[in-house]
Length: 366
Image (cartoon, rainbow, N blue to C red; front, side, top):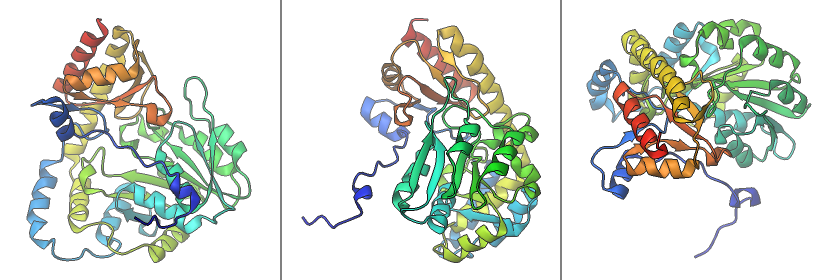
């Protein structure tokens, strides 16, 4: 069969490796019950209010949604406290990342700056758009190397990406540090702060630059409804950015990328404070539980401001991962992040958290 030609860099493209599904693990190991703590999903599932809204609008799915989701944009702008012309919604925040590369990249000339062990989407988009990908090394404790990122940027740098809180380490950058970084970047460079896990930081005013959005001329903040709002399966996220960037993005994107049910669900989720606050309480309690209990099993643990914890077990991570799978518990080994000795586990319900730690203790003989 003919192999149609593509750009050389695409032939060697490394695709994103998602976590394993519950259904696949049940099939592989003949299990009836599986606990998934691998994909940083909401431990409480989807809000009952949102589920009712989806059911109520299901009969409308033969209709196209309104392009650019103006109702959702207005609700996000009101909720976050920024002008509506600065908000762009997308099919997950991944679409916003992809569009940023598409509207800003000059193939063979532009570059972007990231740090090692971060979200693979940035590298993927750089490859797809012919942009140089500059990766800054982190220190021994995986701190966010903001100073080094500033040094790596030059007049051809179109974007600098900081994931805060970071996946997979859980570390977060402070508002003042981000403000300093934004101020020293080249004039045409955007600081893109990926805030997929920002809902779980404490205290929130210390970490998100969006609260002082009017102080920044070059800030793009990315957020998602997949985590705290429990809408990962509907794929809806948004970006907060300078109005000129938002306008270019809207003018150049394909139509109808956020589906009708996703828009209705996201609007309902923004108004459901009860579910949101309960999610935060469960996550923060479970996070502290992991941070206290994992060291007692001989694991090295890193502080986290996200809904997950990264740890290094006292035996090979791959062995621990596979042993947990056989017991019906899915966690995320971090070899794909370049951290082969580490595992990431997201917070589940109290029962799921206890089951994970009991299984881990058995495996480690602790």
